[in-house]
Image 1 (tube, chains in turn blue, brown):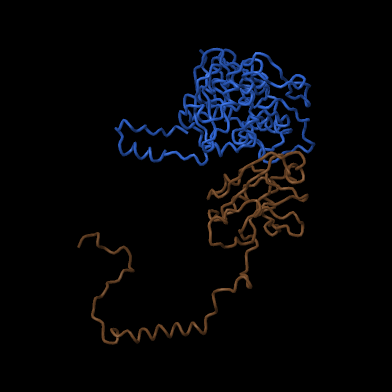
Image 2: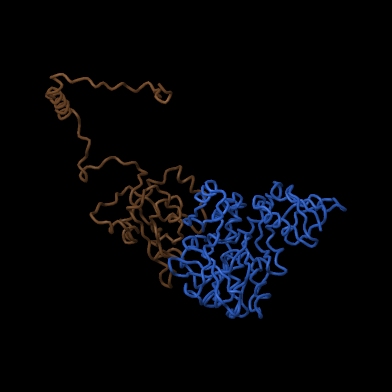
Length: 335
Length: 196
């Protein structure tokens, strides 16, 4: 076990945990402390060897360990740095580090087209959140943004290469979840791009998961393309018996219509269980699914607009009848 | 006397229940007095109404009236059905359906997505102008035009045929009056190449 202090909050974690995971453990322990968790664009908890590309999760280590208390000379990527016993990490309390992260975000946005008004990812885009929290209101970049010839990668997945931030998450999905990788990153440096091998369509049963892991709108659901903005749809937890996957998914309904199906994402916006393509693209009828109930959406998300909850009513009920077992106790910490 | 009966202010008056005198009971002097006041106003006070539509009241140049969906310089619709106006709308008056631009429609719509249906319910609308503030594409503006009256409810749901400005350059709706220096300064922040 190693004791690590992140932004003056102590936690004891098993050896081999990364700083990012330790910070997330703090956030899971108490939601009020979740602010210490560094944002991550390329790290994905369910994908091995992910992380280390985007640098948004950088943190400052002011004390290496109990045995060697020297600080680390440069900000380190928290998703790839393991904790040591007695390590002291600074994230939100260090203004220099916030400045460095703002710089990283500015670089990520250099080639991003900022076409959020037409992008289907808008409203659930990690890059939108990140640039809202860390970005500048205007770009200083004066050159032409990078553009690509559009590539058709199949009937179900739409690739917008201009929006890609090269996080490699989709490549890891293709490598680890599907049995044959037919796409990857080609070329180098500024011109590198996600592409399929000789524009071969992706036909694996689990290829749709790269839509869910994509932190931006580079890979989107073509069956949902322009169907609705996500915040006008109603997300519901649902499941079905599927012989290929767990069948646990979120269906995004508008009226009685299932507009799209995605995997369930945890509090860090990462998919809990990968679902298969037939669940995702073919089961678009409400009779295919057993609805469990409305999905809990963070009230700071635009998706929660118009989805009113009876929190206040419940709070009043708990005060009026504190011993009624039928009333859920009101939790002030929750969202 | 309990404390609850204490007056809260000095303005309360004791109501008297005394008997009215004969002059008061016949009411005629009071009626005559009232009629005199009415007659005086009949000759002195100017009419409070105007003869609309021949005569128009002076309007603020940033009056918030009927909406317009602007086209750009090349006559393409600016709206991309991003839905931000509908989210910003406190009256939930705006609905839209998006569609993908087909090949050959590049002259009609500016971007690859456009609103195939765009409706504003003018009975719900409170003309607050939040849609105009929210629009990232400078597509929707409130204008100094008034929403015409009607006897039915249905005609108040305005579709694109009412909202999008005409293609003819001479019939375009002028919103430059709304672009006060303060507005332009605020919009400087939104100057991205794809919006120019």
